[in-house]
Length: 271
Length: 281
Image 1 (tube, rainbow over the protein chains, first blue to last red):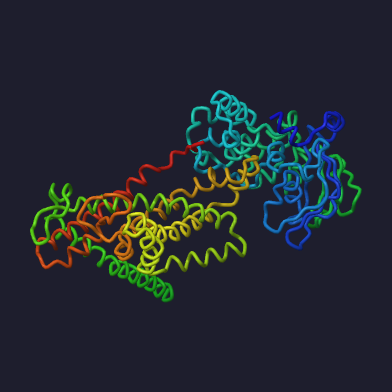
Image 2: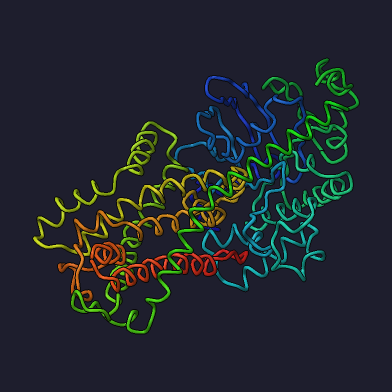
């Protein structure tokens, strides 16, 4: 992974400067689908080893915002981005940065659990490694085990690693997807409404899991569920119609918001 | 209550109509199979599978050279047609959302409807005439032109059925696009792709017209890429024209062999490629 760091263009100084407090800095970020602008001039700094929640009504651009952080947005035909996103001080949109390398450092978990249906549990977790050319069985075994343990799934599946990933329950599948994302050793984890397709018990387990992961990762979670943001997030950003309305510590957003719009949304008056 | 009864009767009528149509559709298929087996079985003996045809007008001999020819043709055609067909299908499904893709798709659909005799004449003009002899290679190229559009179309359709969430999941892991296509998308769509290949092989194995223009037919076993060769369909056609009872029986036998050949290729391909929940890397 060392040479990949170089290909991201990292400089020793910038690592030091940005590594501690802010992992990601978003500057004047705008995004479009065709001619429809879905993000309008977002400026935001995301702290390292903390959980940042993005809340807002449907269609406000929450998902688009995090998809801009690992350059997934541009995969949609007609999608366009402008502005800068610094990861450890390096603009991931600058010309010499390979989006594939960005995606290895910034992992993502989606709304609906989407394990690869043709693969076993083991291969699902190992997919990101194997398909990037790592074949050493010992290395794979170690990383698969570590990732499954980190995702609190190891004890449930350790005897069934050969079974298809789709044989697991919904909550287990989502934890499998988290393990799959962790296996490629990212630094940032993006979660796009990771619990909205799950039952409350499975969802609560995922929430606890996410909190346990912030020691090692910088986490950005998009959520529809304000209680969830209040429970897990250290910082919360409120997005409305593609604009960042307010961004602060979670406790302050929920107890004492500065903007009336935020207050109305949190009080459930719209959205 | 009255209304409920009428709806129930309507439901039954629609079901009955569908059932009748299925039976009507199956009758020709069943009777062809029955006729082929009834008339073909008496022809099958060890000579039939090991010897070439004897002198015309004398009974005895076999169709081993035709079986060999058909197998060679299927092999050569697949070698040319399957890679091109699958790659084109991948292009259309994964990268073909543009003007060029639309043109290729249209052309491909037109090519699929092309009369096979025209393709045979094309191969005759472009390959047989320049090299100066009938050739299994010309036959394989003609058949590949029939095969490619079928595989392209079925591959594209199967890949499009793979949910986009799987592509995104793979891309988000930092897996490159081509790797995603080969190891995630193609593997998920495998059974549809194989069905397409099998359909195209069945179609190609049953072609006669383009072979008259390209491999001509022969009494002998395969003897080189620039010599005429025989094939089961050509043999069936020639035997059916002969005024002898034994020739007709052998023709039926050859037809039965052709059907069994295509069927066993189909079954073995499915067994060999069954899903094992493993990705080969």
